[in-house]
Image (cartoon, rainbow, N blue to C red; front, side, top):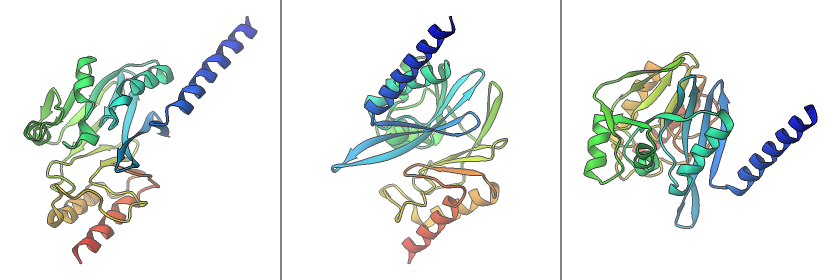
Length: 241
């Protein structure tokens, strides 16, 4: 009986390994506790550009923070979560209206996932014909899902006029999305919809509210610890000069 179990376990491990090798467009990394960062990629002028999102496994299901950018990875992400955690995605929150945050909202709605964004993001999705959440919140909101709670925070305009961050107090994780730049970034990236005058004050508000996070997850490229907030300020200062 033990031999059968071992063979079955090895089979599942091998299948998972094959999947992760074949699927180069979806990368899932364990962050801490029940938090995972997943990265999908989009071809921008011949360069595969990474976009970070995150998910949290609770005892009431999985919560997504932003959706895959690559439309081919919507179902593979759900399949990966199901295989790894034996849980379904029950909630998704988009942190601003660009498609690297919202592309999968309609797909998730069709799968029965409750989708949320701020009211400002909800309206901008409608204005710019981006995928839209089913529900919205008007103010900073605390969500309770199973054995976890977390809060959304809107500090002001920056990368976009609607960008929010999400704070997980118990684990001291700040999910910054595209408001926060990775230490690997040497510029501010896409600033087509940015408010360069307000971005720096907005970032300073985030730092004052969450001064000592253990992890800060930016919207693109890698992360280290909590150096991303100060690095973003330096990039903003350089852009102003």
